[in-house]
Figure 1 (tube, rainbow, N blue to C red):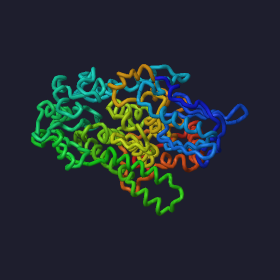
Figure 2: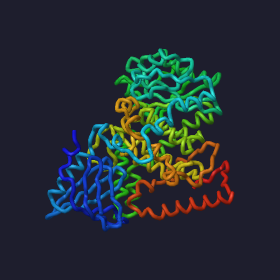
Figure 3: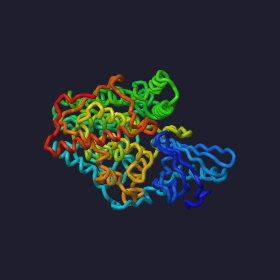
Figure 4: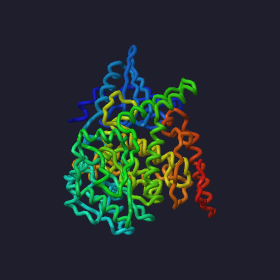
Length: 542
């Protein structure tokens, strides 16, 4: 397929309205295979305006007289308006944008054509392999090993080639465990807590079914996990479904671990919303934030009714429970829901941020996202196909990764000195997860990325974000390493709407950017003078 076949009109004269704070931009509008460009002309002082077409979430068009208007609602929550000369040109450009912004083929997407200056193909793809984290675990304990049983992805299509498993369990046993877990996602190590020797594991639900099937190898794997911690260790299985939902799953072949079959393990249910209800909450929140004419009481009522902050609260509460089990009670914790690719990853990644100081560094957080979301099989291609504006409502879409980023933002707000990265990195990850010139978030699993040759034919997002010119926008100038766990307050009255994202294009951005730059300047001056900030055990929660 040629992109030219989908471009009905290549160019037209247009005026671009980018929001209440940005001045209108007039010039020649051009449609290419991957971008929408507006050139203001040789006499103008403005730069070329560029929009990646994959960022378009929905498009509305209307015509009047001899002109037309196209409204583009973007996945990063921007709303853009194009006033175009000519009715036919308006309709043709709208149809072109609709076709080009919804191409399903991965290998025709822009990352396979993006070749920025200063970056080489292959750079940064090797930054966060599973072997790197295993080396850290191996320095702390000898009870775990790196298995390549999934090297050809035949055991579990959503797992990476290599996973960390108990040393006492061989690969043949792992293969039988995989057949007993939905999608082949048998229990693997997510995090080793060196101070207590306990571990955080993740998997999918067991396929017990109505007959209450058992798997000796699966039971042995969880016994080996306890034995590798310390003699007499115990654990709990944190199920992110309600007890009723887990019971109903048996009818379709799923279920839970039987108490008698897994001695030493207790089961807890902490239901987390996922799928369509979470997407609907996101949509309603964005609708409320975009309604600027309602009263404050009405707006607050809509904010409460969308339940987004309630989802944030539940996610943080469940992560704190998992972190408490590992860090304070000395227990091993296995987290799973049904598939193990959504709320499971949300809990395990947040628990590590709470417990592990290295995960709160710039490099450590990038590794956490790579290991616990991308390599762990979160289906980004499905979950992030649309944002909050699309009229399509597929059941497989859900802003689980956005919920994770919001929870991380809440941690950064309550512990402003403890994260080496700032809001800029979280906003960048949100944007790139939904539409990106880089290949990092393409596809829904490592198997799919290998089939599409993503690692050899596209650039890694980490290579772009780690450029020196980008770091100043992404780093937290107030950061001071904090060796302690950070336990957030999860009461609703302490959680805040993430205005930097949800109100980003509605309110003037300049004050926050100016303040950020001033903080950078102050901290730079202090370090030049030899004055380093310090952090106490009881870091203030702002």
